[in-house]
Length: 241
Image (cartoon, rainbow, N blue to C red):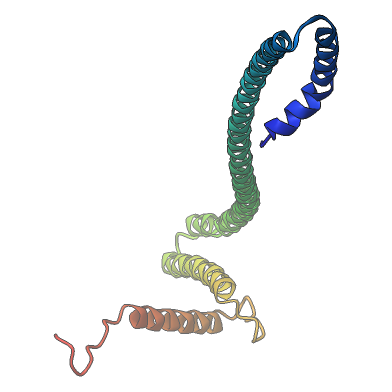
């Protein structure tokens, strides 16, 4: 801040000092001789100069205080700007962290929901397997009455032991055949489910031979795929053995 001291003193002291000098001069002119008036005027000039000097020093002191205050305000303004910048950075970092936490929580919710869906699916598959096991057990129990029946026939026909033996053997073979057919049917159903073979009409439950052919084809394809996957890589023309 620049101040013109001359203009300031002119505006501040000009009128008052001029009036005082005029009054002092007119009063002195009436009372003093010319030499005395000169001395008086010098003294008055010295007093006026001293007063102006004191007021100028006071003004300069006030001006220095204002400059110091201005510098302090500028420094505080810089500190405030720095604080605001740090606070703004702090808010931005918190926003980034909040967004990251929101995304992480969203991913965790999605994973939890997917695991719940997988759990429900596994529970349903387990129930289906238990139901299938119970059904097979009932079929086995139903077929188990035939050996008991044949045993009673053998006991009642001891004279026809050979025939009974043949019947018993036939019954066992029949039971074994039934078990084989049931196992073949179950294995065929598993193969169809795994292979998702919907391009052809399903084989009848009593056509065990056709079911075995389907199973054999599926196993052959599976073995071929397994051998292809586990086949060692062939070295190139410049490769090492």
